[in-house]
Length: 166
Image (cartoon, rainbow, N blue to C red; front, side):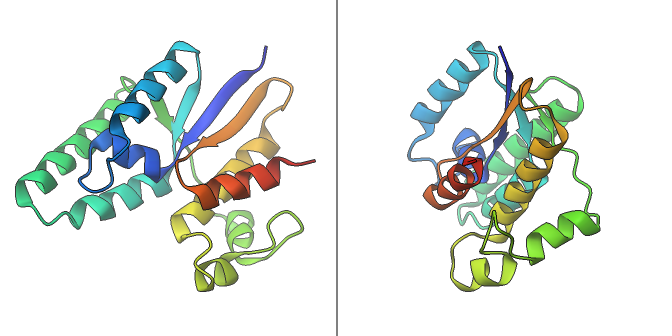
C-alpha cells in the first residue's frame, strides 16, 4: 500500500485556525482532518499556506479575534518546529527551476503566473502550492508515495485534478 502525503492548502488551514468569515466549514474540516489522521495520511504544510493564512489573520477587524488567531498560528508553527504537529513543513527551495515553474506556461499548466493572476484563475499562493506539489511528485516514487493537495478551493482542486491526468 502506498503512503499518502497531502499538502494542506490555505483554505483548510483557515478553517483549522477558526479565522472569522473563513470558517464556515470548520466542524466538517476538523472531522475530516481527524479521519485523515486515523487513516495514516501524512501532511505537509506549504510555506505559501502559512504566508497566506498570516495575511488573512492580520486583516481580521476584531482585535481580540485577530490576537486569538495570531496566537493559534504561532502555536501551530511552534508545534511543527517541535515535531508535535500532525504535519511537517514542506521544504521549499526558491531556485531557478522552481521560479521557472511559476513563470513559464507548460503543457501541464497552460496558465502560468501572468495569465493566472490576470484572469484571477489562481492566486500566487496557489501557484506556489502547485509548483511544490509538482516538485514533490517528481522527486518521490509514485509507486511508494501518493502526493495530493487537500483544498476547499474549487479552482486549485481543478488544476491539481487536471495535472494528475496521464
